[in-house]
Image: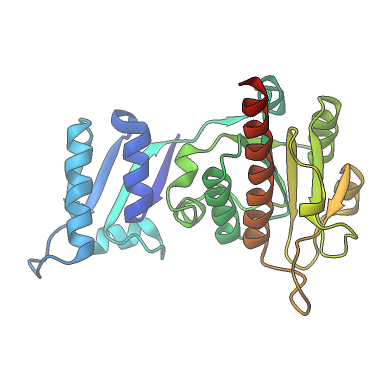
Length: 256
């Protein structure tokens, strides 16, 4: 099946990652109104797509508006193959060092922003349940600013079963919660880790919390103990990556 990618940066990243496998790119027809930043970016997309042998069509803005269904396309849309989505068995077979787990993240903006942070901090996988979750939609792709093209995605029928399977393989499962007694920077995170992020407000479901090895809160100050889900994920991922890098540096030093 095909998927719709809208927006300059998402389309640019899709071409960069998938190249000739992109079905086609549709760009707004120039109105002759000058050389704005967007028009230069769109011309760059056209050149990149053509260099990969991808069909490029110039169309009226109204046609793009109709295809985007209210989404902000910025004059650029790409048609591409569906993203590859893997199973928890594939995830475990890869011996991941860092997994991001999402519990009831139903807002495409949060979903996409978390994907962007996960890719930025080199998470190996992003895992979420097939129910009670935002879909892999153009809005999600756009919110990730193209980062989703670089991500490895895992969708499961049972989040609790997936967490139990990760724990059985030695992955430390850390849930984020504003009411946790321990701050995330007080936990040793140098080993393979899964960070579980819940919905803003309601947090993690009870069953999901019970599958975590430990709950942790962010080192925030009152009255802002709870942050947006995507912001929380970014802070937690930074801390995990910081500790992983510190452990790797220590191992290198000892080996010299």
